[in-house]
View: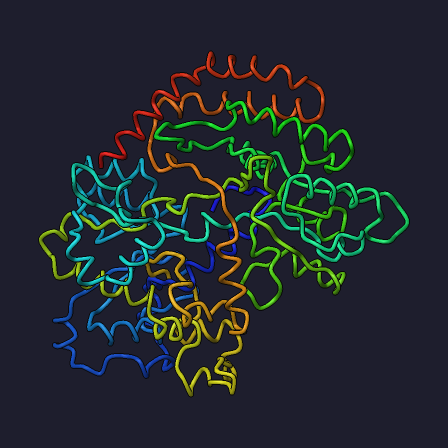
Length: 543
């Protein structure tokens, strides 16, 4: 979820939605004593002695003002799985600090989430992490395991396995490997006489020329560009043009068993030649060098550009998915505006695609070492996490609360809040609808019931499914692997590449110097980086 700087607002939309919809219950201690009658219908009616005998699970909370320990959603979970609950209260910024302090004091939490692979390895070396048995996942979290296989392939734990053992569950975003696309203003294509969405690099170039020269916005001025973008990172730099030549700068990819970097391959020179021509002909927004994420979005909304590379959901029409920022803002200004999307233009050899994201972005869940001896508790956590991530009953309880009290079903099968629960703060007070954070991946395409929570109009589900698979290309295979040599050299190598490519695109440096750049890249440490990368990849294949 991290490759388009100008789509950061879209990513944040997803981060928030993951937190809110896939949920581990949370609240402040004050809620325990200030419990009102709200939310009581889902509370336990057992005796005090019986309640004291229940297993106690603990959950992290980052937004205690939105959540209630004895509110509707948490009581719903406690009743369903017969447990009591406590909370680790922390903000996102302090979770790691609290975790480290707890471990240092010997009070290891039952579980924690959202760590990097470097932190994962550190905690394993400290011997504070419980092993997770595959047979437990197969028995108590089969839907989760099936989802991991669907997104990550036959061996979803290969990046997390250490000495043949698994100590963590993958953190994944299943949209990442297919998220980025090229979008054209379809109404502009029609305006300039193009009846077929461009599919090849040549067809795209022709469309960009017309966007620049044929007054697609009809204001009588030559004030539009073919395409806008940003140069925030190597991967952001018009990667679909490089993809048309089969290379992916800024990422470690595989070619016949060998790890390669697209920026130093000969085909990158061909892509730079195309981009230099586009820039010299005025087809590229000249401010792409300084554009930030909001600048790119603003230029699309202000109708200054006819094409953009971004996440598909940002361009999708209303009702298909969440976070369609560009489409929504543009449509308010121009109701006739709409987009046609492609995975990337085909190059001379039929290659196409753009740099995508790795679905595996970190370690989602680790359990404390003590749960190896308290196996029943680990099983209970797995059962709860499975339910909150993959069962529509849980999603309804979290998002809408109690049927007949806080919501009612509509004639078309949807949900409608009952007053006063159309007010967000009233929902929080009753104990649902807040940022409860139970572990789980972005999994709303797991089945149609889950998908319908973000695609309210079920007639849009086929379009959503099509768009979710539209993006193609390659992602960094080694992103999850710690490589000390790469870490040491990355900043200087990326700086060299980005500045060289910008100079070649804008004409400040001749493209004939490409081979000199490659030699300099290797001399500055790139050769050591590639040697380390190959070793890391070979080791990964042996896991």
